[in-house]
Image (cartoon, rainbow, N blue to C red; front, side, top):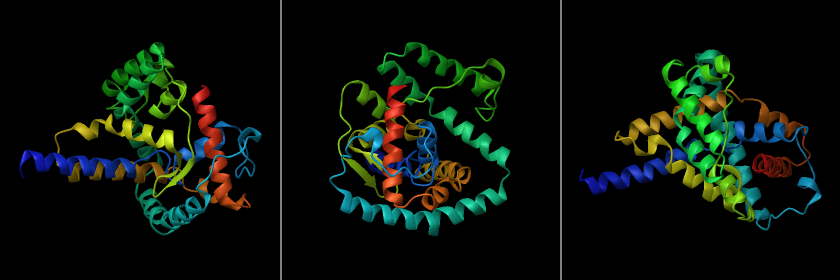
Length: 252
């Protein structure tokens, strides 16, 4: 294949792979962390902080939400359950650590763009420690032995700190809850994933990103189910939980 054709395939494939490994896919850690971060019980039924919800596309959002819900229960969850049955918890946790260690460039860049130079430095030190003594990040030695806690930072947060408004609430097919600002930020962060730039065949990247996505989901099975059981309206619960999470995350 000519280089131009290869580049187009790689670009399109990388975008698809990035969608598969989004942190805000329904049923994955994004939602669980969102609810825990604001110390709310599952299924908040009122707008975040008493403010009106910017959800002008609710009708179409609900349709996409129902689609994502069906994909989760009929495709994603069965695969993740089988995956969890095949691999022990410690191994899957190690894989999660390794994938997290790999995408440190996005965290470093966003910390710098936010003026958090000290946190960017800690992320670099963590990467060096975990990539050498931590079996390429499989074990979080920086946290366990040196008490160096990591920092999460994304471009959606960076845009918010620069004064960019969130825009309307969106539910993206397969991705789940988001908004205009965070969706744009997600695209920028995806380009900073090292797997986007590695000179490897597209199917290798696809396998790695799919494994990353399934592995993470296997560690969070049950969160979305608990949310639905505790909610009169799961759509509202997911929407408000996501909005509260992002407000908390941006204010850190």
